[in-house]
Image 1 (tube, rainbow, N blue to C red):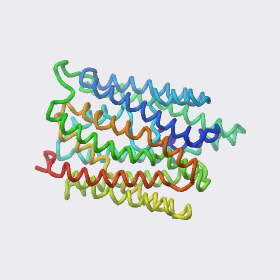
Image 2 (cartoon, one colour):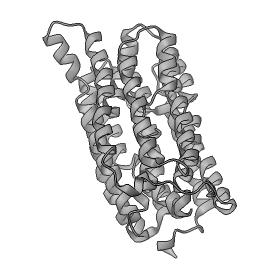
Image 3 (cartoon, rainbow, N blue to C red):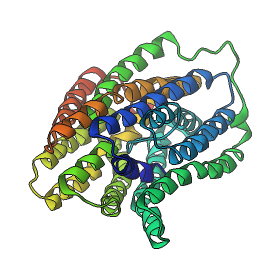
Image 4 (cartoon, rainbow, N blue to C red):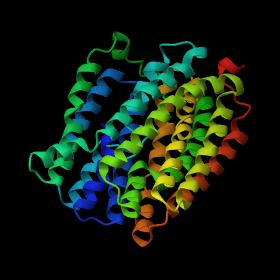
Length: 381
């Protein structure tokens, strides 16, 4: 349902009469709230069972969707976004992330880890793409039933919340291993692992700071204002992008086996930033969307590789904390840029936020290659 949310969110807020600055503030609030939840999960995962934490996170998700769908005042929506689980970007920044990553990484061998995360990302991308494709369906149904467009938007958020009940069923069937806890003597991270993880977290934060200027919701806002596309049309575009992102996950495995995890992250990420710069300068909607869709083939290729790398450089008992610590700063770093991006789009239809995004990401790529080119996972030694 995240795929539907990041398409519907800016359209719903525009429909309520909010400015770009206010919309950016809601997006930022959502990212900040996700950061707090994710950090809490990461530091408690070695003391409480992952299954229990997943169920608690799902209950928050259910409450978030229903409350957001029934609310209208700006301040109330801002608060709900801050304490909820809504994800306004294509990436999965949520409390579910460190728990799922740590559980999955314990089930496979080192040489199969990247392929497993590629499959994990493949499923997530395809489901997210399907959600984006269906973004216009609730609105279409509402109009056919002679309800308002706003009713359709609200239905989408309530459906997001209700979908959490399906997750409750799935998480309740997890294996017994997921219900076990480590001893209280276990530390979240050892000193050696902490040094590596904090360096990675700093670099990932730079990447996410740039990404905050071009989240899916911000991109949707730019498209609505610049080209006046409908939610259903934009949903199709996000579906195509998500499908290509899913395919790229499988390609990333083959590339990483040849050139290594770090080089795969860098050499696929930089071209995607260059394509984003191209999107900003395209004069027509067709050319802009064509480059954006092509970028989808590269933009998420580093995701399963990055996750595999983080899981590889720490001990198994440290993986939930490592996933949390590397993802929370990313969420925090991405939280404020949407406010600035929304303000920029209030002032001009030119995609200045995309240029800032691409610049930050290119700097991140070169720093990552310089700092970690010689720190290799077990399967590359």
